[in-house]
Amino acid sequence: MTTAIFGLSATGKTFLASKLHADKKIHTDDYMEHGFEMSMYHCLDAAKKYQTENPSCHLIVEGVQVARMLRKGFKVDKVIVCESDVSSRLNRHRERGTKVNPGFDRTLTKIFNEWRFMDDGVTPIEVIKN
Image 1 (tube, rainbow, N blue to C red):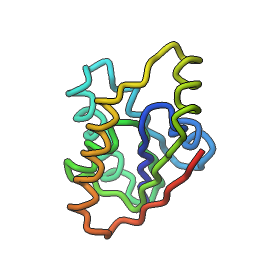
Image 2: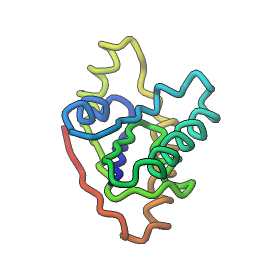
Image 3: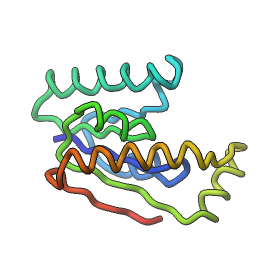
Image 4: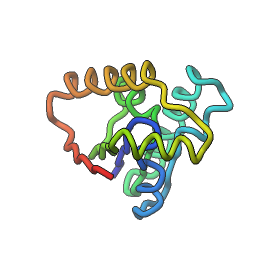
């Protein structure tokens, strides 16, 4: 079983993944050493390899790259979408010393919605607001 956790920056994806049981967890930010564009491909390769080699194990993949992975054809059994109000996201970004990037948010949302259209409602989606 594979669960994907998607959300914009600072919406609680990593926190949620830390609370869920899985045989393996892949955090897409761990692949950023390859650069933004290539990190998704390295993460996608690692996730697909794990799925192939461990078909009966539970894999969780979480991070902002999940939308791109899904659009590239990554198959999952369930998607959890983390949502958070703007003030909570801003507070988390302040704590981390980072900033909200509205253009990045729009792009990720567009990519996720493109995948949802292609998926045509086949994959169950659960929305968690925090």
